[in-house]
Length: 309
Ligand code: DGY
Image (cartoon, rainbow, N blue to C red; front, top):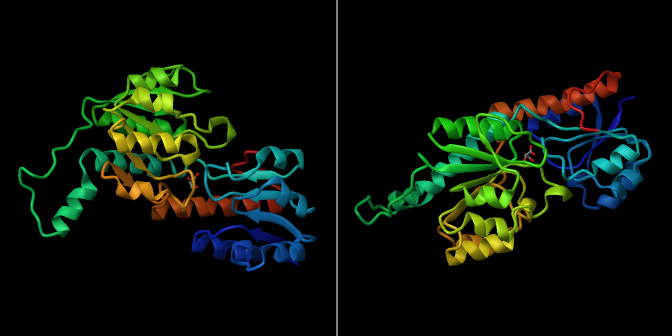
């Protein structure tokens, strides 16, 4: 008899196929009546693949032993509640560091060099003349990285290679050369031309990029968020993008996804991206493989390759 597993959202096709080979899968995200599905499968489900798992869902699944998240960020899982219930939680760290760093630099270049506008310009049959807006360069600018973790360090390496000065802030980071460490986010923002947000989501970082931080970044400053929308005071950011309080923003994540504010669409000084920082062939395959490796290890009673709880 195979183990019963609840899948909470769409995963990469190859990952879903590998899971379906090993487990009896119930797809919560495809169920018309989710509560009815949960009630039906609750007595037997021992594993979850995916996120969006709160304490209430855990309490409905008395045999639940593991939640294998497809993603490094596990803020959509109540990890504390899982720990209290002896439920293991795994994520997919490291395999996405390069993809995340690449999209961050890509967003920065796109915003600084107005690539979305340039693309539109050419498609409209026009050709640059003195009228195409001049742009800014990354070279020589200061980038402040909020969160010099595994991904943040890869961003720093690439930013430095692009001749940027790198400073950083992070609640848990120790001063680490060769980058300049700030123990105050407002002060770091004041010293930065670019603020890159790549810290974990969750309650501890909610709106950490406050209006005060955004004001310190100021009218010459660009914000890049590839972490979670919850880290930024989005209302303040929108207002400042509208009135020139910020120079621009490149955003892969939003406070409410996918129901983002329409106000974004009217802005020329933003680059918008649909939460796809890790969406390269090799990275998503590696993430899927890690989800399956964690589930296999759990099913075999082996140590979990990437447990967070
Ligand atoms: C991650 O891995 O956390 C990405 O943001 C996808 O959710």
